[in-house]
Length: 200
Image (cartoon, rainbow, N blue to C red):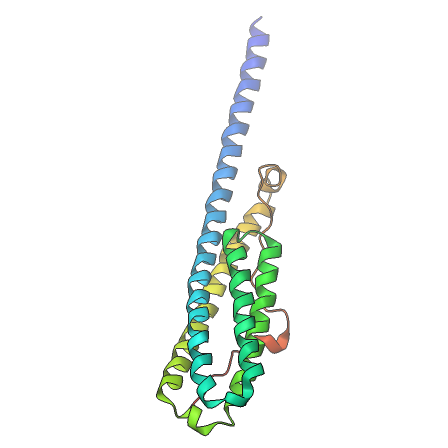
């Protein structure tokens, strides 16, 4: 009888240790997931700032670039698409498809802004406009903040993914609902260049 109690005691202790161990893994993954979600919220703030600047930029350019209507409309369409993609990604930064969609929409927006800035070089009066210069300065500052926020997000995602894929968490993570998170990367090498906003 004593041997049975010892075996039951050891089994019970083993179960308790496994439960405590599992709770520790779960809590660590929750903490890391919340960190990368918070890091994405910083990207979200900066992207919203960028999206708010673009209509003012286009409106200012419109008065000087009346013949470039197609380019100006393309910038606004790209901005609206990126804003929608950002809203989807902000709802669940762990959704790889949403992050992929945001990366594609941001690449399209960067491309259309690049075309706008290239065309604006042909308008000296636009380059010297104080409102346009101020908007460009704000946009440059925002682009830098986006880059820093994206780096912080990618660092948080890497830490989360590493913890998720490490033993023994890798045994429990999928069962507990912890899916891999996607880095916010620029995949096309030409998109890696920052939007050039030199006006002056």
